[in-house]
Amino acid sequence: VVFAILSGRPVGLTLLLLPVLLALQFLLILGPAYLVGACNVRFRDTARITQILLQLLLFLTPVFYSTSSVPERWRFVYGLNPMAVLVDAYRDVLLLGSAPDWTSLAMVSVVSCAVLWIGFHTFERMKNGFVEEIE
Image (tube, rainbow, N blue to C red; front, side, top):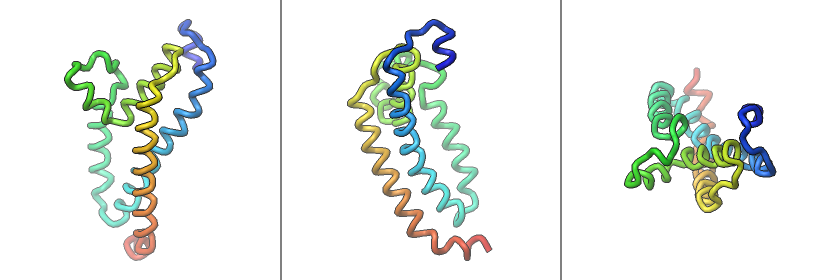
């Protein structure tokens, strides 16, 4: 927010959407965190695999480049990445001062809730064996 103000970008009421985006990102990340945490107790190589996958996802998410620079035929694939949708939403709110695409954010919300439900229930089912695995 400070950099947006210092760079002369329009700062308006759209900044009130920032907590909504942060909450949505938290929900999106919490589900895989439950899954990775549960799997890491049982399978020790999970951390290494997760590092590789996260680095791959970093390059597949338009953080350092705009989605508009992605060729038109590949934009649908980028749209399947929920973090790409969130990064675009952050860019809209913070840099452009406009409202994000609500349809895409609704889809990300549904995916986030589904992944959170799967991750939480997997964690709950596996947590009873954690003590035996750690010892």
